[in-house]
Length: 171
Length: 444
Image (cartoon, rainbow over all chains, first blue to last red; front, side):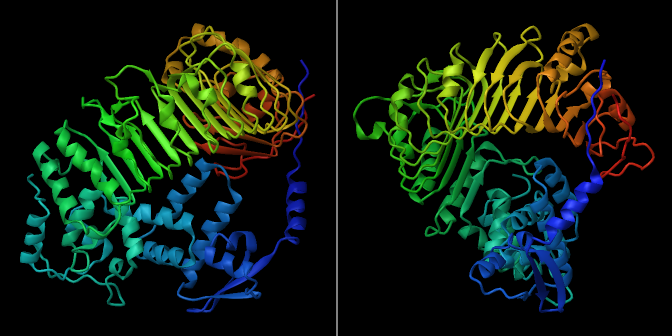
């Protein structure tokens, strides 16, 4: 029985990729808070609506200053955007997101605030869902602990709110 | 309770509260209204945040804090009364866990309608209510309507027997379980000029569907239903899904009428053997799943779609493809528990057909096989004409599969074998996900 051969030459593939990359546009993003620079492909950077608008309006020079976002958050964001531009398989992306968002509350907030500021909808939706999952079903004490919310209500105010909103643990 | 314990971050700010309102709303919108209201005791800033939250969802009743029947009614009434009345409702979801009084339900439904709701999802489950007049749902702002409620299809010319939904894009109707199947009256679709997506579950299309104009319809999903007798007129349809739908004998005509459709998904009920042509000129994605329980029906399908790129099967089919090169072919033998526990005799019926099925698949760049196929040690031609197949993705959700085993026995020389799921025992390069192994050797 004749067996057929399927040839794939991975070496050739990667060489092709490098050649192609010289046709791609690259941008430099510089976080103004801590002066870190990131070189990214334009196709990845425009996942941010803010950057996309800048590029389309032609006011993006070779280095784009990005305020309010810290270097390490920017790095994470670029990693996310890169993966989401490269990969189209939903299953793989889901796994990636779950792993990617395995962060502590502080890192999650930075990510959430930055994604909101940069208008990256996909990232923002993922992070807010994750934050919501973290506080779902938890008691108010646990939520305050997780989200580091300062409690400035007195015990009476809390009790009053509970009563008003017809919510008691026994009901 | 140590309510005065201050927990702040290094900057001394309250982290979540330093977020803008729109982000807090987004987080709250995933929580369900019950928990959103509970956030009123988190801090001063949070006290009244829930009152301006545009999302209302009374559909999750978590076991941690179960509500009594009257408790739920009281809670919902309280929310509707104390909510900021100037805030519109963007999305309203209600799942009737108990049989609530009809007046309560009516009051509940009118609230979002009166507050410019955009997305409405009402599920009355199996509780028996008097059918609702269609006009109950008339709204200028509604974009998405999902109902599992008994509807009153009074055909008189009275104004309250019709609904007017000028902005509606998505309509999803589910037949309540206690009702028997019925045909949607044609007039229900007439006052929906913006409709792009129609989903019917347990409800049939009107007989007059071929003469109803739904000019913007791009997506049609039907479940547990039947097609009308006359072939539909849907030149603009882009996506079709048929799940357990009784398909007529002249199905080929129904397909050829879909001149723009790009993806088709069909889940067979297997009530009879299907032989038909799919000749949709713009078809790019095709997915067909059949049911293991109906083992004797090996369906035959001829696909004449030049642009077809992705083909995905669950089950065994005789498919003749008249297409150019496919990008991705994904084949799973069976997706069900039935298969796992089937006897060897039962499985043999299918394995006999696997090789002829493959031989008809033509060429593909990526072939994804499930482990059940690989385990059978295919010693024959897999995809004969594919001289450019470079990537084989092995879906190994439950099993460990040896790479050499795959390569040796299914005659694919893989430059890279990428696995999805459990680790693959590669030949020496470890269990990492990326390139497990490069296997050489020609198989002539």
